[in-house]
Amino acid sequence: MFAILVYDVQEGRVAKALKICRKYLIWVQNSVFEGEITEARLRSLKGELMAVLEENNDSVIVYTFENSRYTKRVTWGIERGSVSNII
Image 1 (tube, helix red, strand yellow):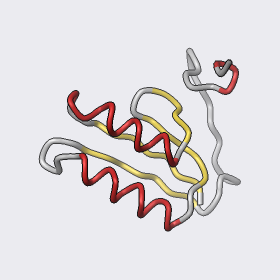
Image 2: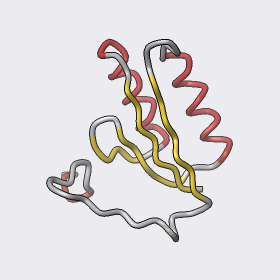
Image 3: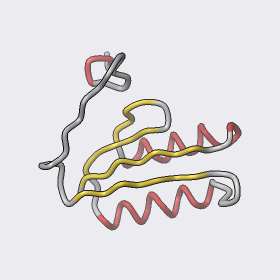
């Protein structure tokens, strides 16, 4: 499946959340990730994130699609996390 994950995490946990999300999805920009992921890996991602986050203070939203066929991605302004930025 294709997933888009966004999070709003308090400052002290941002680096940990970023590191976990990068293991599973592609970083798009601050607190936003996307990519193909299996159900099992999504469960693993959730488990790792929930171990770090505080449910009363932090928020994660995951949009899932059966595949990326019917999605269209448009960037307005600077495209962060693009492949061209990798050396």
